[in-house]
Structures are given as C-alpha cells and as structure tokens.
Amino acid sequence: MGNFTILLVLISIMALLNALADRFKLSSPIVLIIAGIAMGFIPFIPTIEIDPGVVFLLFLPPLLYDAAFNLHFKDFRENLNTISSMAFGLVFLTTVGIAVIAHYIIPGMSWPLAFVLGAILSSTDAVAALSITKGLGLSPLTITILEGESLLNDASALVAYRYATAAVTGAAFIWWKASFTFLILIGGGIVIGLVIAKILATVLRLIRNQILAVLSYTLLAPFITYLLAEELHCSAVIAVVALGLSISKLSEARFPEELKRQSASIWELLVFLLNGLIFVLIGLELPVVVKSISYDDLWKDAAYALLITVTALIIRMVRVFSKKEGLQRGFNHPNIKNSKQAISAFTLLGLQESLVISWSGMRGIVSLAVAIGLPKTLVHGQPFPMRGTIIYITTVVVLITIVGQGLLLPILMKKINAQQSCTKS
Image (tube, rainbow, N blue to C red; front, top):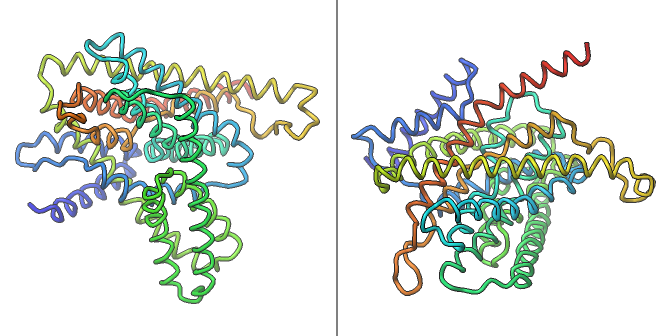
C-alpha cells in the first residue's frame, strides 16, 4: 500500500470518526487517538512512523497561522503579561521540574538526558489544547490565555531542547549565551513575520480583485514564512504567529466580505483535515514505539511517564494560581492602580479560569515529533543514550494528557458550573 493510498484511507477514517464523535457528543481528538492506537495493533496495517520534518513543515505552519489569525489581538495584547509568563517562564520551570524528577526516578538518566526529556515535554500543544477545550463553553479570557500560551511556548521549549541535546554531546551550557540566543530567536522571528506580512499586504492590494490569487498567497504565506525563519535560524513558530496576527488585522480592515467567507471556508476545511490526521498519527505512534521497548520496561516506563505528567500538572497549577494572586495584588495596589502599568479587571483570573487553564496543559504532536527527531547517534558514532526510553515516555505522557485530562476536563467544567449556579442561587 503506497503512502498516498494510506493517506486517503486515514483521511476517510478520520472524517467518519469525527462525524460519529459529533453525533454521540464525544471528544473527537480522544476518539481519533484511540482509533489510531487500535489500528496500529492490527497485524496487516503497515507501520506508519511520524516524520518530524513533515510535522514541522506540513502541519505546524497552517495550524499556527490559523490559530493566530483567529486570535483576538486586543485580548491577546491585554493578557500578554499572563501569556508570556506561561509561554516562557512556565516552560523553563517545567523543564527543570521534569528534569529533576526524571534524573532521580529513572535509572541511568543523566542530568543532560533528564533536561532533554524535560525540554521535550515542557510546552503545551496548540492543536491538542484547543481541540479538547472546543465546545466546553470556556470564558473568552481562558481561551485567549490557552491559545496565546500554546502559540508562543514552542519557541522557548525548542531553545531549551537545543541546549539540552548539546549538553548530551558534552558541550558546556553558558547562561548568557543561551539567553542571547533566545532573544535572537524570538526577535528575529517577530521581524521575519512582520516583514512577510508587510510584503503580503502589498501583494494582496495589487491583486485584490483576483480572489483565487489572494487565497493562494494567503495559503502559501505560512509555509514561506516558516521556511525563511528556519533558514535564518530564527524562531519559525514565532514568525508564523506574527504573520497570522498581522494578516488578521489586515483582514478585518481591508478584506471584502466575500473574500472573508471563502477564506474562512478553505481554512476551516484545511484545519479540520490536519487536526484529525494529527490525532490519528499520535495514536498510530504508540504501537510503533512499544515494539522498540522490552516488555519488562513497558510498565516501569509508563509509571515514570505518569509521575512526570503529575509533576508537570502540579508545576502548572502552582504557576497559574501564583499568577492569579499576583494579578489580584497588582490590581489592588494603590501605586499601580493609577499608573500606566495598571491591571485591567478583564485580565484578572478567577477560580474557574485558573482551574481550567491548569488542567488544559496537554502535550501533543510537537513533543512527539521532537522526541522522534532525537539524533540516533552522537558526534563520534555512539548511539544516543536512552533514545527509545525518551520517545516511549514522551508518547505515554502525550496520551495521558490528551486522553486522561481530556476525558476529565468536561467533568471538571460541569462541577465548576454547578458550584457557580449554587453560589448565585
């Protein structure tokens, strides 16, 4: 069975499962992952492995662009303080927390390897978080923070990953150099995204009456931006997000209604197909990884993955609730209240927002792709230590966060809403 045939079969299965999930009021990402796992264990199904290059080039640019395009820029800007603390500060805290746990509980896990695992699992996934929470009636503030965080945190996670893998090969870690690299990556990504957006805006004005040409350029722009940023060694993720935010503002001001409708329909279909394929591929990856692990290690490593998931969840909850308290103190502080740094009441986190944001830290396809993309050998030809273990633990953590947290999130929402109803009455 050729790759093209396999792709068509997966798309057909994914579309059918999505329809069934909607009909029976089930979470489609969870249904697709479980179906992927089941298909992966069928003997005559060909082995399908995730190609990290395909994930980063084919899936990330359009999905990041669409999420950024549909993000309300005003809300994003107002909550940038909270979003940046989650997307950058929380990522590094999670990296360290997971590294400490992994180093002390997993036999043979050196500090550099522990930090590699921590960096891989430090960032939440935009696709997973937004797909799981869709239709749950979340507040606009919660949606803005979850979307903003998951759009930006890949950049800091990839910086941590780069330096952790370098440490495995024996390279020294230099704080000032890492910080400088991080700033260059972020700043360069923003500049590239804004420049491409400016060029695209000029081109679109010249061909504004040719709707098909306009749609073609808007579809190509995320891929071009991503590739250019990669070529210039800047954050491709940040570049695509900056592009999406810029074109969103242009669309509101300049795009005719007919173009907006057609563009929305095309992007809705594209995102639907890519989202569905991602969750099926995540499910299909488990049987592939299981075959590379001995039976005795399967359950031990799965237990390690569960402990790591709990660790990441606790760190996230502590960070979210400390941010909630910090915003409240800043809002009530008399010296800040009447200054330019005054905190808006709309940005304050309530108990419901804090609980949902804490629980919605799903890991996804990016973590899997980064783990699978680990080099097989080191500089001098030695095998990369514990590579199979890291990939398996990452896969299990992704499944636990999407399926486990995803199944419990609606229950958490119902309890919160019921408690709020009782309080009001």
